[in-house]
Image (cartoon, rainbow, N blue to C red):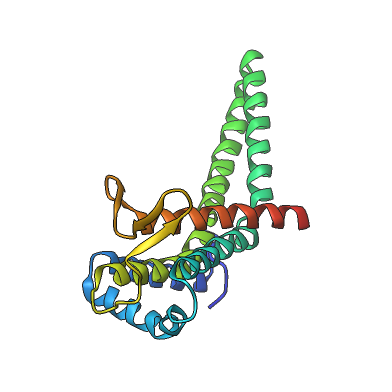
Length: 206
């Protein structure tokens, strides 16, 4: 199951991708959203009675940000991409030099090498999506639960407003810009900032 295929994806990666696509369907398929949100609510419901809701959202966003940062470090082959980019740059220089000399044989050889290198580069690009697939297994259910909490009156676990310094109380479902709601801005902001801090910490420890 975990054997890596020619595109750099293991069987587990492809299974995770299939599950991620199914979860993402929950954005438009109501039964999937209800099922995922209901299952997650069974675990998170008790926490809503203990923690302030803004803190709970912060912890959930932090979990998604941290998991994304860790998965990118573990699954993304940045060094491989850098080596391929260096090879491509070197190849372009050799190609330009061969053309200046009007060395058609060298140009043909370099073109064959270029095709092989392009194939390797495209395969490496595919592996860059592996962290995103695995991180969606965490972020998508959390997002579906949050959306369900604010949309479904039966949930009744979220307070009506978020208390902010200076601004005061702002309704969680208030619109900031376009479709951007307060709860979404809070969640995304917490997730991005946590992920940034986590990547910096991982980079220092590496």
